[in-house]
Image (cartoon, rainbow, N blue to C red; front, top):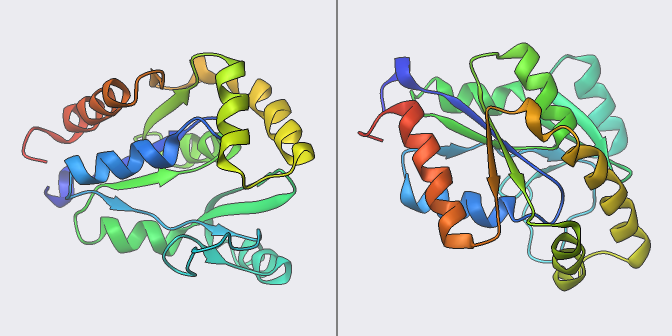
Amino acid sequence: MSGESAKVFVITGPSGVGKGTLIKQLLERVPDLALSVSATTRAPREGEEDGVDYHFLTEDQFQERIGAKDFLEFATYSGNHYGTLNSELDRCLEKGRSVVLEIEVQGATQVRAARPDSVQIFIAPPDESVLRERLRGRGTDSAEAIDRRLKTAEQELAQQDDFDHRIVNDDLDQAAEELESIVRGAVGPEA
């Protein structure tokens, strides 16, 4: 992948739709891609590492970074802040590597405004009941948190037509193939 063809891929969709799983498969299929590590104020889940899974920041640290204009995008989701540090994006693009951002819909809108050349991909569930079961099956959130995520998902799903591409994650292998096809189509077959 050359520097001129390095792209920013924004992958978004409701919580529980399978973005992380699809991105993991995409990175295995297209190993030249880099994954931007997001910052968050949420507490680490079991097994998550600072700087690997997220940059875990305190509320004060996050607000300082906002004030310093260190974020390409940031959003509040289910009571926590999430954001993409400009330094993360620059680290990848300066090496000529296309970069994947796994971010919330609010953040995707900000990236679209700041980087209109980004490739915006929305991952959708087959239906809301599947999304509810996936969130419950993760076992990481309380019933109240799941309800908040589902309310947010309803608003996010209403915006899916604003994206360049939409993939319904009904069949994981098929969705992974669609995602790979979109990425390879944007950066060329040598990726």
